Structures are given as C-alpha cells and as structure tokens.
Image (tube, rainbow, N blue to C red):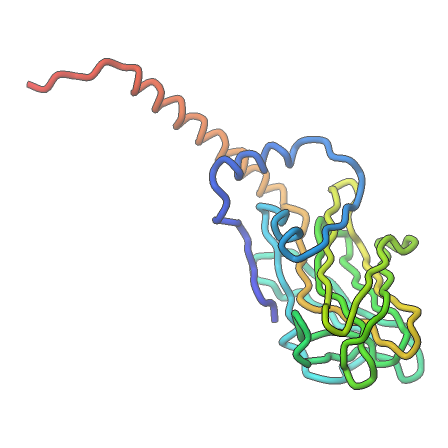
Length: 235
C-alpha cells in the first residue's frame, strides 16, 4: 500500500508551475545530486507527481522469497522491486518497530545488501535509512549506498537515536535505475523506510504544462488590453 500519491502538485502557485514547465525543457547537467533531509528532498519533487511507499501492505516479519515488487499506484507509472542476495538463511524482513519513518524493510540475514530496482529509471528517490541488530533495535554504524551499480557514492552515518533521510535527484539523461544499500559493520542488518519515488514525467505532462503556460499568457494580455481601454459611459 502506498502512503500518498501526488499526481499534480496543486500547492504550487501559477508562477512556480510555469517556471517548472520552462525548466523541464532546459538542458541539464548529467549528474545525480544528493539531498540531506526529508524537507530538502521533497521540496524538489516534480510537478508531474510522485508516490510514497510505507510498506504497510506487507506482513510483519519474514517475507516470502528474495524479492518483493510494488506497482499498484493508481494514476502513476511507478514500479520497483526490492531484493536481496541469495544466501542460506537470507531473505527480506519487515521491521514494524517504532523507528522514525517505519515500518522498515530490510534483510533477514546480517551483512547482506538490499537492491531497489526501478527498471528503466526514475528522476528522484528518497528514504529513511537504518542499521539494526538481531532484535530490530537501531544501532550506530555506517551504510554504503551505490547508484546504478557504481562505486558507493554516499557513506551514511546512522545512530541508535537518529535514522537519517537521504534523497537523490537525477536528470532525464542520467536516471536512477538501481539503488544498493550495504554495510561492513559486523552483525548488522540494513533497512530503509518511507520510500518516495519521482517518475519521469509522461510526454502528455509536458504538453499540458505548455498549454497552461500559453493559456495564462493569453489571459494576461487580455487583461492588459482591457485595463488600457477607455471606460464606457452608462446611459
């Protein structure tokens, strides 16, 4: 089950909406930039929409198999699969303890990685991250995060009292296709929660935004002509 779906951000003022439509067509650098904190990341979510998965549809404890897929988001094309390494005693585990942002999806066996596969790719990804012990208690340590199969680009320090939020924003030339979470801390389990995903906007979204911009321009010109015309007399 997803926590929220925002197919068109109605909170944005018209000026911001028009600016977003213009910026969408502007050339962008091919890079994936990190953002620390949920507020910093969510402020950059695209006008085209996003989904937030809270894993509340999954049963607590051990999951069936080495992977679980998510693709039932009304009105959204987002789909992704969370998987872990095939090994004796390993699998996926849902920790529903009272950690920030929970429930938490992690590994069943210690010191194995988690991979989130977004298929052809998405523009933005953000989540809370944590390390736990065998009793699902949050622990101090360091997480490594790799994007698109590359070398770790973020080393995230976590603690028993704080579960940090980290997000990434890509471009349409360099989308986020996979995200891998791992650790070298002994006897620890990696996990994440409250995953927010921003898909690549559909072509129709750009057409709609372009139409809105054109309509707004026509309305502004009409108002200016009316304001400049002499007032008519009443008889």
